[in-house]
Image 1 (cartoon, rainbow, N blue to C red):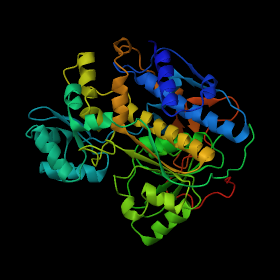
Image 2 (image 1 turned 90 degrees about the vertical axis):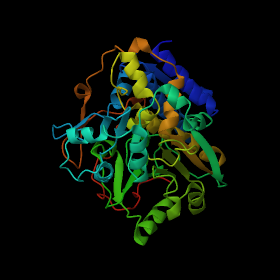
Image 3 (image 1 turned 60 degrees about the vertical axis):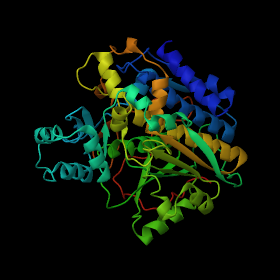
Image 4 (image 1 turned 180 degrees about the vertical axis):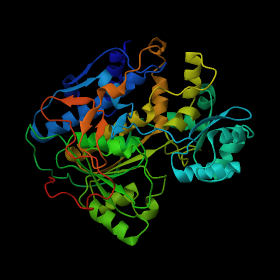
Length: 469
């Protein structure tokens, strides 16, 4: 099966799983070469199909609101490029990884450590018995890690609330109870959390963006969640990124904030809680990537949100899923790749003596697009039958789906495109920004972001007056 046929089959599977209108599918066109991302897994197809799913739902929501279906076109090269996370700020491409982040050899295997945030780095250094801060070199960290056994170091870092992942083969992961728990979960799980009337939305014309007037609170910080919010903004939603003034951010916020309002609300204070409650009262969607149970402690679980704002869509992101022994564990794309056997499988496929990552952070990007897809499916249900809804996705469940698609050894030698040759210039509150545009193109409305990327706290925490209801 070619990549395009594979992507089309994946799109149709998503459509059928959620019993979506078949009349939409002829309005979605997949174009392009067979593969662009060198991998022994269907990475290019996953990128193209998940972006197509988000665009298809935007087409369907537009039809629901104005009676006209646009055409959506998604090219495989454009889809691959969007998943590279490439951007430049003032002519410089920020490093994707901190010096101490990455794969380390242990006394009996490998472990991947995450140190992009200073507090995660310091937890790792403290567990290793090294000085916290920036004085420790990568070579020193590597020499120290080689003195540990993988499981012992994994347990020590996790107990200290750090972030890491033990390196496993695919066979070891499939035998793990977490893998078995994930297999029982839907890829995009959508459940009703309460009864509510259909939210009346102002009708739109054919030239309006499909999500015009849809108000989205984005409480996510690492790649998958911010990509979901950015995608909804590309289809016209008013997306408000909520940051705490005391929390650090990674460089990718410059790229993923395109199209968004950006406001502060400190959820450690009563004032911040009140601000969020006020914003929720006029929100249609609430996207969050907090640790499991974190927002429930503040009064913002999916059920609590349904009581605060009947009809709201809550979309939740986790690393390892909502059930199983690792469900409470923090994680990121690179860590889930390592834990679930992809680094081992790619190393075997490419004849590498050391673990090898997938060519892009496809688990982050595909999961982000699935979040945007699931959010729109839930919006469709709300606007046709009412109710409040909860959408759940996880990086590890997306990984399970990728593995189920089979291997593509014929694609491992394809030439990786140079994303820097495809950057476009954008207005930005950070400086001169060059980044990759959204891969989906609609025949009538634009998918160019209408708001520039700006630093956290630039906007007041209030919805724009022009937003529809």
